[in-house]
Image 1 (tube, rainbow, N blue to C red):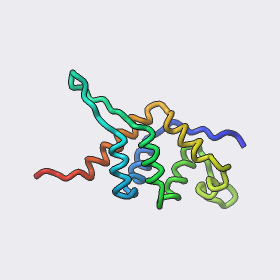
Image 2 (image 1 turned 180 degrees about the vertical axis):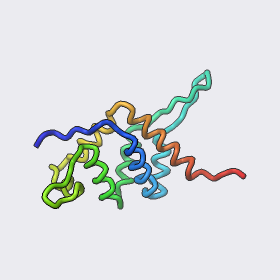
Image 3 (image 1 turned 60 degrees about the horizontal axis):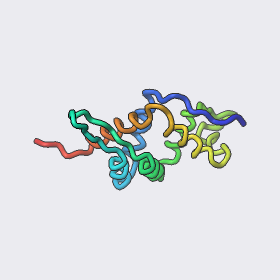
Image 4 (image 1 turned 180 degrees about the horizontal axis):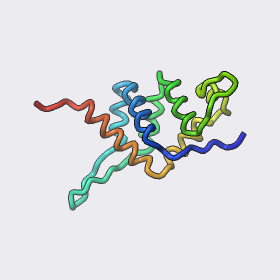
Length: 133
């Protein structure tokens, strides 16, 4: 089998991640928010800092209870299709042990991933923040 290679992130990944984040336990959502921080420099410009280790832990926690959604998204990232009556999730289940880790490593290393995830995380924070009247 050829090594799995993820495709560049696309707009549809925003919706996949948002669905995953919304389905995560509240504690995991808090973990995700704490993995991303915005720091302002002396000129007042916002710089996003991502603690990738904390982010990966939170993403792994978010996977619990959403296995089929996650596997479907990861299968899409590596363009894995079901064959002979199998779904992409069933095909994903047949990958060699460690394939999920390989895909996640590529995802985290992909240019723009940290910024992409930071933006999704900020959006999720805004969506769950109390509104002032």
